[in-house]
Length: 236
Image 1: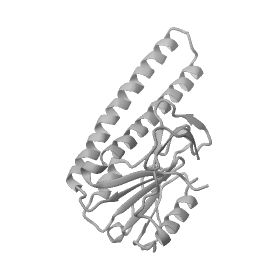
Image 2: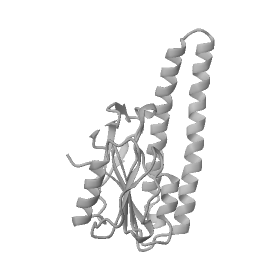
Image 3: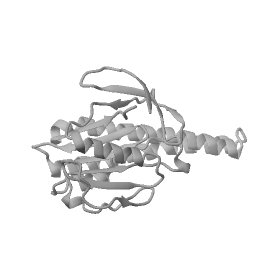
Image 4: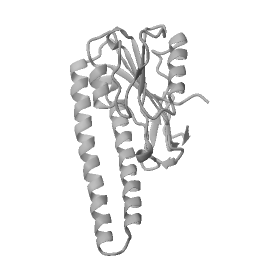
């Protein structure tokens, strides 16, 4: 659950400066706070009860699960089960709502579950009945819903550009850390165990910055591409 303090508010927004992730570690986000918003208004009544029950059920899972539902929250086909970073979703073309989880494994301790991947967004933008996609993680649930003027083509290009640009930033930042730590190890200033620990910690920090930046990009694109997007705080 996020431990947070309010930043510039309005519209139910709150910025978390620390978050407890799936491993149980509390991570510092003070340099890049994670912005929360109101619950997605498209998910209400019996539909909200159904998706929140599923998201709570799979919160601690180490692999991905997904269900698809109609607008009233009725499950259309049996739950889909995948691997740590992938799930093939059955019945998606018939669904109004899809929710799945973003787990983190042992080698990713100290990282956020994160928002939608580019593959998620490409799937979301397809011309089907699907209106809302959700991704539940330790820090909360990301939810995106198409508006009446949803620009599918523009959104696909936007999502792909986010992926390319933010991944390039991440690669550059981690390379800087790796080169510096390698130099310190080669000079005998730190031992192998210390070097490994420092590199993992710094790479996790950069990965979290990457995930927050992607989240902010999707927040920023709502008006231009005709969708609504939020990170919901999990109910106590």
